[in-house]
Every structure is written in structure tokens, then in C-alpha cells.
Image (tube, rainbow, N blue to C red; front, side, top):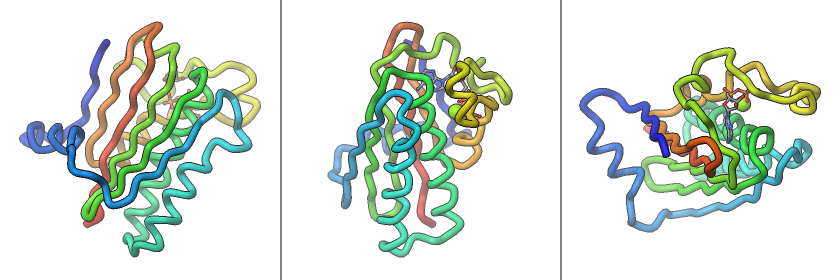
Length: 163
Ligand SMILES: Nc1ncnc2c1ncn2[C@@H]1O[C@H](COP(=O)(O)OP(=O)(O)OP(=O)(O)O)[C@@H](O)[C@H]1O
Ligand SMILES: [Mg+2]
């Protein structure tokens, strides 16, 4: 397995600890993401956004969370055989995890390059495949971790702080 991290310099220890926080979240939401189900993919992101809105999260931060979560959710539907999304909402931040059942990413650094895409024809018919999802997740999150390899499940997880 290869690990990719996008973490501000000097924050490695603190942020990696937050990814593996074992205190219970205030709110935990779980959603299934079936393969190629573009009518339902996006529901986890929009429900998460609605819950955060009710909790009073700032609208600019809400927008970043919604964009990052939507891109990651669509990626599971578009590029994997299916998986799940888990939103862990804490007082001060959200940690969202996307875990699928493969087939994995052969080269994560290449997948991060804007414009790189392996989207098939069906995925492109639905308007995806510009190769901008992962860069967008990185741009909108405070910390990003991807773990994957060819033939393996993929984990994409990110943190976004509320203030
Ligand atoms: N969960 C995943 N499983 C397997 N491969 C993935 C996964 N997520 C991303 N990838 C790979 O990384 C590439 C880049 O992803 P990215 O989201 O940036 O672009 P895209 O999904 O192809 O297009 P867009 O997001 O702009 O619609 C994908 O084309 C795919 O090869
Ligand atoms: Mg994408």
C-alpha cells in the first residue's frame, strides 16, 4: 500500500493524530456508495452538509466540505466497485472517510495531477472525468490522506476545521 499525505509543514504529528482520533464523534453518519449509481451518489455529501448547516457551521466552510465530499463520493461510484462514506463530526472539525473495495489506484501522485483521469465512457457520459476531483479535494481540505495500491481497496480521508 502507498500513502499520500497533504499536510501543512510542521503539522504532521498533530494532524496525523487527528486522523486516528479515538474519542467518539458527536455525530457519525454512514452511507453506502454503490458502483456507478450516479442517481444516488452525492446523497452522503448533501446529507452531511444539511446536518452541518443545522449545527450552524459557517457557509464558506460548508461549501468546502460539500465540494470535497462530493468529489470523493463520486470517485467511489465512478472508479471503484463500491464502498462507503463515514462522516465523523466533532466540535471543531469534520473527518470524512471513503473506503471502497478496490480496484485501487496504481500511482497516487499521478492521480493527483490535474487532468489525469482513467474515467470510462459511461462515467464521461455522466459528465465526470475531467481529472479535477482529487486536486479539488486537496484544495478544499485542511488535511488529506489517501492510501491505496493497484488491486487493493482505496481509503480517501480528509479533515476540515470549522473555524
Ligand atoms: N476511489 C478510487 N478508486 C480507484 N481509482 C480512483 C479513485 N479515486 C480516484 N481514482 C483515480 O484517480 C483519477 C483522478 O481522480 P479525479 O477525481 O481527480 O478525476 P476523475 O474522477 O477522473 O474526474 P473528475 O473528478 O474531474 O470528474 C481517476 O481517474 C482514477 O483513475
Ligand atoms: Mg473524480
